[in-house]
Image (cartoon, rainbow, N blue to C red):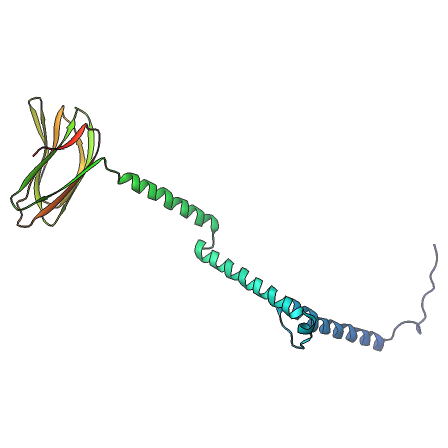
Length: 209
């Protein structure tokens, strides 16, 4: 191995020289920061040199891009509530819920009629024993009395009776083969509009008045 000669004390830099070098390096760094880095990265050009060198324009573009990216991020957070997966789950849930709601509101048949005071009407489902049908009855403008019953083959049955009804819903399970449905009469002093919606197991929904 070679033994290098140690420098003499006279050859080593003095403390003053080290301090001067440090100050020069720091000053150079400040100059580069002010004239190059700030204009190019942040569009901050206190000396005007960045504009002359075209660095300020670069910084302006970067600043605009950063602002647009931040605006997009905030908008996404506002829409998703900060959780994109939760947002997607919510959208999926809305579609599923809407599909279920739409399916729940599909009725096979529907009829609407108006009953003046004292008027009556009768609608029946043609069903066989054991068949089941769902119904919803809506009454607007007044109230009606009704008799939900069935008859056929010499048999008859009363399922339900109502007085002063403004609406009902439920199901009919046919006790035997025949016609099963409603007789309405308006005993109110106001004209009533009745809407009946039905679905399920039956052959026909017909006016039996």
